[in-house]
Length: 220
Image 1 (cartoon, rainbow, N blue to C red):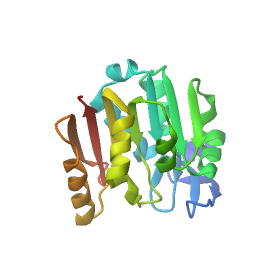
Image 2 (cartoon, helix red, strand yellow):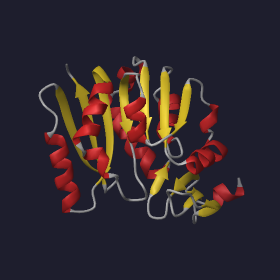
Image 3 (cartoon, rainbow, N blue to C red):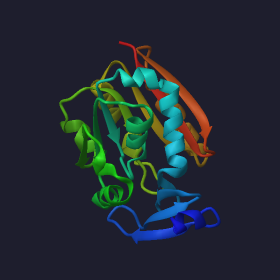
Image 4 (cartoon, one colour):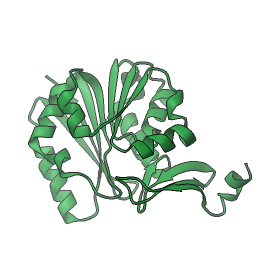
């Protein structure tokens, strides 16, 4: 409690760990909230949770409550899962895929990731998982970063087509991207152009300064 109160004055680091995929992971009290950060960006809770919460609000909490199955690619500390369970009040099935076992370990120890019912966490590469899964989903959340870098495969046709195949009609993709320069803006413009009239694509720029959100609805 004392550390939490002091964190309103300055951040207080309580745990630090390196992983295979992240140079440095830190669990920190910041402004009264426990957050998970990588070397250069927020990984879970803090600003990232605010970004994804806005995306879920754009889709609509009431609509999400009526979904049956949600896929989260990039779990990190589990902030989007917490929002879905505690704020959206989603009771359906959530499958979370996270490549970094160390992140899941921290999320379970410090952020209660293992306390939710009807949530399955899979340690796997997102690309490999979407190739193997036979399930279909009503909402697919894509939130995959290695520090401030996004893997190229997220924007390639094969992955996009596979995600579209796994999405039920009237389902949504919520894709969180980071915009740091002109090349990132161009990358996102090309990504948007890959969806035909069977999809309704909306782009929300400058969320928490550097984030740009896509919400994509499958119409047919």
